[in-house]
Length: 315
Ligand code: SF4
Image 1 (cartoon, rainbow, N blue to C red):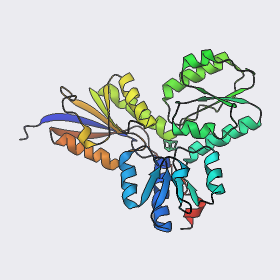
Image 2 (image 1 turned 90 degrees about the vertical axis):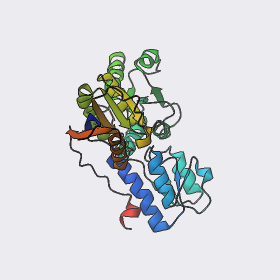
Image 3 (image 1 turned 45 degrees about the vertical axis):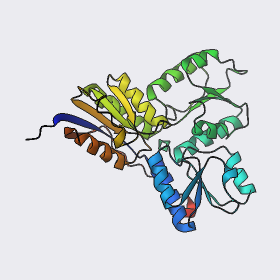
Image 4 (image 1 turned 120 degrees about the horizontal axis):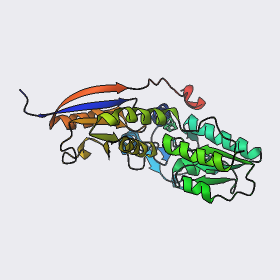
């Protein structure tokens, strides 16, 4: 009989890769296959070191700005989206580029353009400095969009035309925090125009719902994801708010057995940019110390698949 301590492991489903991340990675892989290495990628294609390193090994070169891409080299734009100035600069330099922006982010870009064309000022709910926010702000002329991060920000707004506003949101926010901010916007600006719910994507909200279902049953919860992954950080928050201690880990070796002391039921999930391989790695690591009894808790089924860019469909 095993002398290992028993650990009940509740694994969230859905978890890990979303359709946008899957597509972005595939775009880089196909670009390398079709155009040959090196293929440059502006910014981490998705916020996960493991994914980035695997693509580097295949011939991708990651840079932060277009100026770091040599003339004549192909370049891919990350899933988070880019300001309009980036493809414009690539075209001006005659660079061959592929856009891996998630179609759900592109949808927000088009909405922003349409709202500004209709003369509205946009209040954008998001996190300052996140590449998706920078990309979305870069779809409209300067001064036509204002960032709102908190309910307190809503109270501080002083728009020139309070009856001519619209709101949009980042795709990877906390569903609950965003609902509060939108409610505050609607209270303060009753004529504000907005999408039916918000622009938080299906993958972000499904992963948060799965965590909310599991966390109350757990003593603690591990979230696999990168520290710069917005949707992964939101999963840690969701678990904590649902009553479980929660910790972000990047991979198996980050599991802190001291932190797990006294835990008999552990929850496990992964952010939208974390590959399933890392989930198995974490389970294997846990199995070094515990007799792990795994159970998958499915709260939704995802079937979303996004088409590849036209240039690669033919490949
Ligand atoms: S998290 Fe959502 S918006 Fe971001 S890449 Fe995935 S599906 Fe697209």
